[in-house]
Image (cartoon, rainbow, N blue to C red):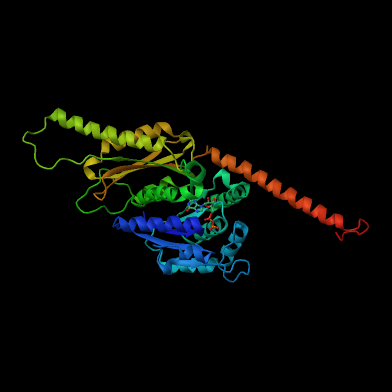
Length: 389
Ligand code: GDP
């Protein structure tokens, strides 16, 4: 799955940067096209792995921005993105899009630049390119306040109009115990990157001398994520025991071999179950998912077709729909087996409902403060003066 990833704003840029860093460390051959877009120069300068020519500063000509960001004003973020959409699209075009499978925009939805810019970019990309456009939207934690919720709700509503799928990550649900939200960011970003890295491996050529049990194509990811809803991702890993080197003097009995095979299948199936029932990127009711995708990666001797099929059957019973796709990716670069479960088009997401409520309250509060201010200002004037209209 070849992604053109656009990290929009600070959170988006940092997640993209970490993705590239982890791929580099792993000596990965996965192809990714990266672009970091921001209105704040310092955020772009802080990136380590996004090549300099793949960083784009927008809003320099706007006197309110001038390279210093848009604060938490996502309307200004959207305006700047709209004004400079040609510059952004040209940068994407110049990097080449002929060999990509999909666009992936990553942004924090509670802030200004990414929250405002991501929907504008999604709109134009979906109009210009045949490839699907996905977004990873990071939701603010409730403790960040109502303004962030209002921003996120506005951004989410706009994104859902234009993206083929919106993968949500809830900062509130992922805040680590004993840590502040800011301190948790690095760990949350690691979790996001692990999941995206596995998704990016679907349908990609495997390392030489390894064969997958059940290969999955990028078109299957696209089919799972079609339709324009919200998705949540589950993930679980397990450390595998290394096989002892050398040959056994005795051939294993047939029953013994069967026992090992069944054990492998059970392990894969229970790992997938753990991924689906554990902490999801955004907590949701798994029974409300329309479709699902399972991807398992790890050393080839630990992958198992029967296990995947078992997991697939189990998931089919759990979700609302019946479309479950499953595949694996053999790799010798790890001692872990990892399972990814994408729950596509989930409709029962409590945090989204809560966000809508908080956003409505914030809107009301802002409007009543504005009304009060206008009334107070008008009180200064003599009542005899008639307004013009
Ligand atoms: P922008 O630069 O104006 O787009 O604003 P940010 O990207 O900083 O967006 C602010 C929102 O993103 C807030 O809700 C933050 O909680 C969240 N956020 C900021 N940085 C990070 C990060 O590194 N990781 C995660 N997970 N969330 C972040």
